[in-house]
Length: 466
View 1 (cartoon, rainbow, N blue to C red):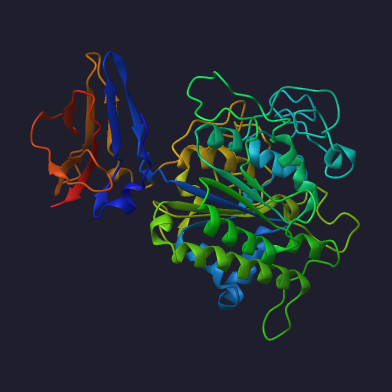
View 2: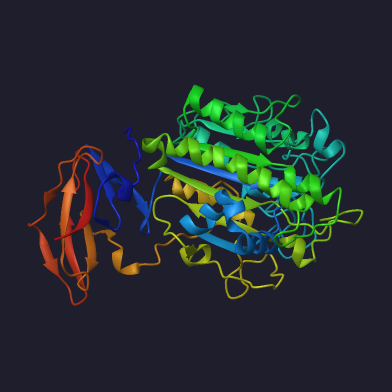
């Protein structure tokens, strides 16, 4: 069955809760495909921006003291979910190890160890050298050019194999390591794998080249705009801005207050702010795409500057603390990123280990991006991944649940406490019409229940204020 996802809250007005697609064909067991996940709408596009050396506390200070000078980051902070206390990989605060973690959803080392086994961890410990830049260096080999280990699937695999386009535009030559890892030579041939629509080995449809790549945030922003105008917005687009990292490698990281001149680091963030504005401007000028797009922004690591390796010490809070923003359908303006996850906890300034049994929940890491993106796109988790954030709408009274029954039907439930609403259904999420559900309704001590017998037709449900 072919279908096009649409974000429920954007597609219709006065929607409260989850919409579900129910379908069956002949004797095939009915399938249930969500148009939302625990109250967060599924979208058609995810844009993920990694800002190199974007330190959480530094950006927070900048936005608190002179927000009008950084309108795009201010829009991120104020217009959606924000935290300045997310985390890098536990053991590494460098670019290539962290970007490898971002796309695979795996830590660098085996969790809780310093072992480069490459079984659960991806094992790419190198940030420079032949393990990154060699013409045969790939993430599927330990250290990039060591012994071959297991294939490390990525967010690009999952999206590409679903039949949707992917894109990756970056401003640092070493990041081509990841493009090479998922190209027509080193990507996985998934022919015959159940559920795969596009089995081709090349998992990244549009990408920056190994040479002549965009040199800074401004250039990456222009490439994004040109590509989106030419090819349409990819289902998953990953972007990388280099500018703050260039600054911390050349000078000490400082922040100033008006009316003093901006520091080198602040100027670099300002350049990123301007380019981020190009992304916002494109979305604003394409409202249909904007309505079904989530933008995620984080850092790959922080930095201190003024030392030989300005962000190499993974024990420094300045290096392992990064911001994490989410804006799009379902993420309320001015909210805290952590409130949207049932299994992530704000760590404050604690350097929480990478085991998933801490705090009592671990902190949000940039490595959560891979499965956050697949979840928002309504797709499965990345095979072999370790970081699996669980999304939830913090307004739990708005959640409609659906569960199969022993007899093959499904029960659509919503709380009795949600008074003043009526259940409506449609077979066309985009065009409607929506009709009142007034049959097969019962009540339990705490829920309203509508029983659905799946058929060949598809159906969406919503609660609407009366």
